[in-house]
Image (cartoon, rainbow, N blue to C red; front, side, top):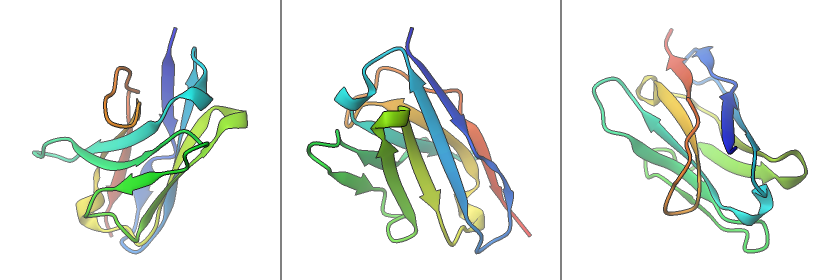
Length: 117
């Protein structure tokens, strides 16, 4: 069965960095785009970043994270990453990995990121 397992969240000070990972299994990872979403307290879920299949090599980012976050993938490890730099308190949220570029049929359980001094 399809599984997406996020890791790498935690507590970080403003200006700090974290790298999230999403380990995928149960499907041919290289055939699918992948995305990261987040949902902060009292907020709606929002797109953080998406990455296409490696052959197309396309990425897109939410406006609030452009220039600070980078999505990447390593097909040999069935893993998608989210490198988050210059973190701000408003980045505090639960971060979710999802299968797909624009439409998503499977989601992970999420990993919590808290940005606070």
